Length: 152
Length: 152
Image 1 (cartoon, rainbow over the protein chains, first blue to last red):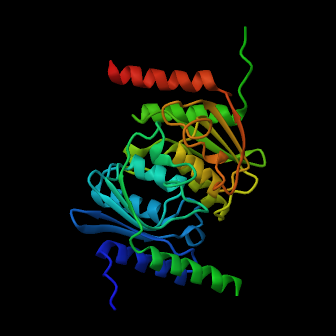
Image 2 (tube, rainbow over the protein chains, first blue to last red; image 1 turned 45 degrees about the vertical axis):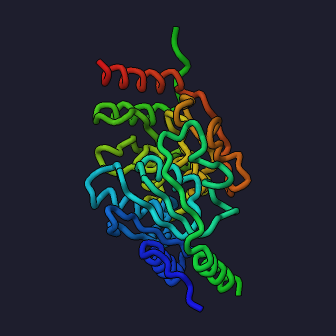
Image 3 (cartoon, rainbow over the protein chains, first blue to last red; image 1 turned 135 degrees about the vertical axis):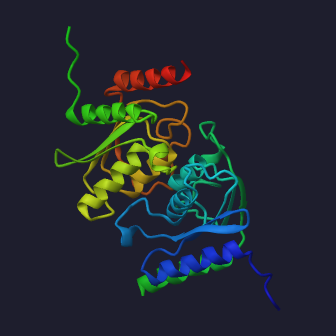
């Protein structure tokens, strides 16, 4: 039996998550897509960069803004392996991301479908369309393997 | 009649907010204090830097982490002229800021005492002590003057 192939941007985000794990960072990866092309990729890197804001989504958004020369990412999609936290959900709003695709839910730190529910607040000035669950098993496996290895 | 003088870090944050206005950015300023010394200062600069994440708090936190060579700002205080949004509140948590002082409340975008109430969620792994209202009148005046001039 073959698994339905993941869309390219989620496969790319998962590859970034794997790269994070190899770098000793919690394995989360993200890409920004515009007009069907990946214009920025990043993985979680707060330890490597000594930057508490260096989540995959933040780095991908900042790189995409730099690539476009614009602080608004109108019409862009963000694909990320894990449900964004409050910081990253806020950045998605500020960047005017049109569509958010994420893999696994994050009961511990998520702020989209639980907790702060950033996009559901009346203070949220821009809400992306949100699609979740694609690549969920792969994303969760990477996280479990990473934390299992660290405990081992 | 003399006004009670503001603590130095809030006066420095307000000076940063004024600098933001002169640069054509929404006037919000922030400083990070460790052991009584300001170790990082920043103002809101998303347009100038073409970076949707470049709020005053984010830049101040990133500069402080760079100055300390550590992604955790243990024992540090963040002083900011306006109530942080969800993105910045999340960053404050990730950075392990010990104490947050902010001037004016922000009914439109705040995520501390309203909206997402980031620090009150069970997903919030680190809660700073929060003090608000110091420099409120000054911070609100800068914002009102900025938006009034832009409409004029």
